[in-house]
Image 1 (cartoon, helix red, strand yellow):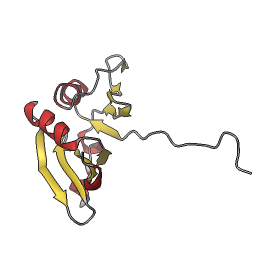
Image 2 (spheres, one colour):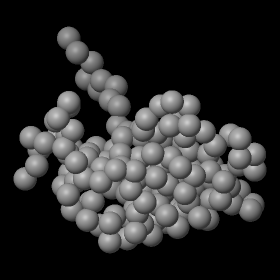
Image 3 (cartoon, one colour):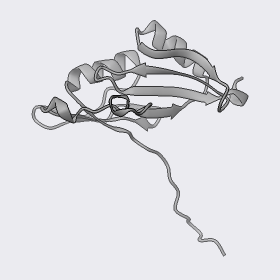
Length: 135
């Protein structure tokens, strides 16, 4: 018999170390549409901007060597965010001046419609949805 209240995973929050918390927040909030969050530290060094329950954890560090986006080490995305209505989100980000890593595209290999942006520290963030989920 399954438990009455089984454990459930409810989210994920990429943790990015950043060089300038204020500049990062301006980008995440003004360009990517996240809500301005509570700030921690004096002066502030940590924040968790949120959009529709999806959170990025941003931690300012003084040593820039700690900032290591995946592509600098031979990787690809630093975060992949699943969305609904990816085309509208793309248009919103474009109107807000996002820096695109690649434009809206269909990935035949795994059948997603997606695009990706760079944040101020070079983190590579993709936003996508299954092509079969387009309305």
